Amino acid sequence: MPAATHSTGTATVVGGGPAGLMAAETMAAAGFAVTVYEHKSSFARKFILAGRGGLNITHSEPLDRLLARYGPERKFLESAIRSFDSEQLRGWCKELGEPTFVGTSGRVFPDSFKATPLLRAWLQRLDAMGVDFRPLHRWLGWNSHVEGRGLLFSSPLEQQFEVSSDVTVFALGGASWPRVGSDGSWVDRFVDQGITVNHLRPTNCGLVVSWTSVMVEKFAGVPLKNVVVSVGDERSRGDVMVTASGLEGGPIYALSRAARAELDFNARCIVGVDLQPDLTFSQLWERLEQRRRPKDSLSTLLRRSGFDPVAVGLMREAMSNELPTSEMGLASLAKLVPVLVTGLMPIDRAISTAGGVAFDEVDQNFMLHKLPGVFVAGEMLDWEAPTGGYLLQASLSIGVAAGRGAIEWLSTSR
Ligand SMILES: Cc1cc2nc3c(=O)[nH]c(=O)nc-3n(C[C@H](O)[C@H](O)[C@H](O)COP(=O)(O)OP(=O)(O)OC[C@H]3O[C@@H](n4cnc5c(N)ncnc54)[C@H](O)[C@@H]3O)c2cc1C
Image (tube, rainbow, N blue to C red; front, side, top):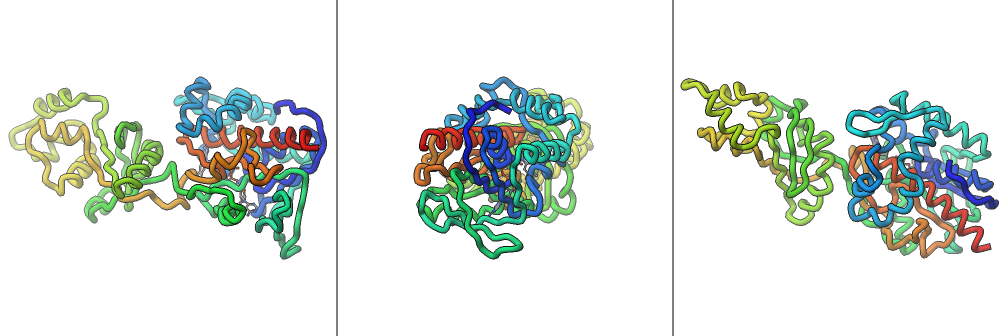
């Protein structure tokens, strides 16, 4: 854990996900009496959910490339991520008895490929540091305007009670997968305080396509293997899953920001699918010519030329079942099959959330201008990033930065 200046004070952390727990650790390390309130019966449930995929905790690429993944919000996050970067994060995991390894794509995972051992060790460490955990405590809002310190909670024992402390860190998450805890219900309470919160929307999510019944019956649940998908200039490669209601999978999630912008502008979006990314248009055209037999149907020709049935199905779907008959026509379609997307899949199944507390509302330490002594951390803030470990990296780095900001603010305001 990065060193912090020693001072004492009382801190309330609202939300026991990775960002909140990291802020708690930072402040407890500086001698603060920290209490973490969490409305679920256990902590960091989304972190545990992320562990089902192996817990991709950060990425090993050079820092500048990693920072570029945060797009236009990089400028707000850079200082926090530089101060607790991927190397420091990996060191922190190791200290907790969970060393990490770099996977083939550069993604970083704990050796155990799980979240539970890391979380268990982390909670034990926080407990040993004196952090007071209050599960089943739901934050309801503020009681008064007095510097945002009168926090109202409910618990199984008390319908409503008030808590105040020297500093508060909110880390209530976004609104994806509400069943594991973060449901976005904090938004109205923040707006009531005059704080701008940009609309919470799905990101790293699937895209809605109105397939014909033929496509659904034959190919729902079948992956399009090794394709390149694109929206405008954005491209992403890998396996894409055809589902009954659209397209899912890593390459699609990577395009969701670009697709959202296009949908906002045009109410529709075309995703291009390159079914043969390892061949140029001319190579594919040549291959089709070479492999054609006089009596071949178009489907047989395509299958003999390396197309899976689902790929042929996608080409037929895009052309209302009227495939081009020339090799040149087939090659140009296969290099860019247009798929009409009409929306984003609902936020409750998205990996993460776009929107949140506007960066204009916080200072460089993530303290709310309108509520001095009150900090905001993690996915509650209006940033987004692709999958690849960037979400946890930023959430944890902001947790450290907000915790340090709270320590600094209290020492200067006293
Ligand atoms: C299926 C899935 C897989 C993922 N995999 C990865 C991955 O491999 N790598 C990666 O980098 N990211 C991954 N993520 C994203 C990552 O988990 C989140 O970005 C991260 O958890 C955000 O941390 P946070 O602390 O800001 O918010 P959260 O983890 O959402 O924590 C917020 C906490 O606040 C609590 N809370 C909410 N409202 C209240 C209230 N009113 N009172 C009290 N408590 C409240 C919630 O219960 C929750 O515990 C994944 C997400 C999903 C859904």
